[in-house]
Length: 307
Image (cartoon, rainbow, N blue to C red; front, side, top):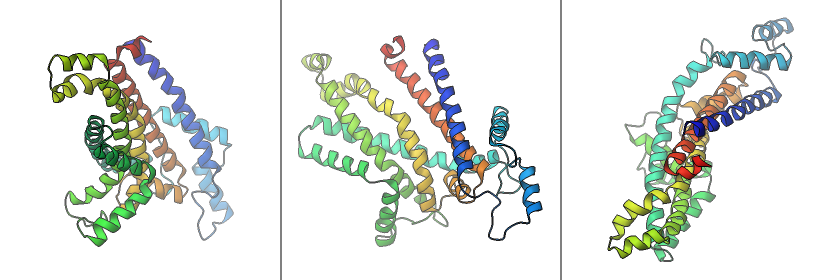
């Protein structure tokens, strides 16, 4: 198991390095700069500012300086949020983004696995077709369309829930953002669970369990659920990545003061270090989560780590 884990970890390091280099080059290739404003600065002032932040150096030297800082855990200062480092801004916004993301993942797992299992047990019935129709709809509609529709329906028309974050009472302000983030993942997990459960229910050991007189609930809980969850577990890495990246749009729509708002404002203001820091932070988090999923997959299915 240790060899399997080390192999996965060593494979993740080149991926992270590639993300850092590509993100650095793409951010610096964007037009404009962090200190561009409506009123142009005098040339000598602009030159002094660029020298202070090492923006006057060749791009390769800037990249080397930035990677050297990353190895020391330094994401650099923010160009637009004065007196704040990028690490401090991430520490301010990420806990809220993490809370909303975890709630969305939990909701997606509960609803997706339950509905997928029910659809598999009622294969070909009207209930199965309804569940799969909703799943296809959830996959097809992106979150930046779902969010305004939910606000218009549940907040503006019916006035059941608050439309935004600011001034909203208690836990009610979490409901719309969490549902918006969870809906596409509910659809994917439901489809994966249904297909995997149908495959598992047709295997010999399930027929043996039925021949022994075990009830359907016992067969599902004891024998079928664990092998049926392997495809869902494999999908959890991409699912978490989709929720983290989707939160950027959702936080902007609902006015949530999380990491997504910092990313959008950093991109609009050409705050190189802030955008890079958030991209690298998300990339590291996603790679780590995928690594955890791979390890869990190896624990559940010994054939994977043996290969």
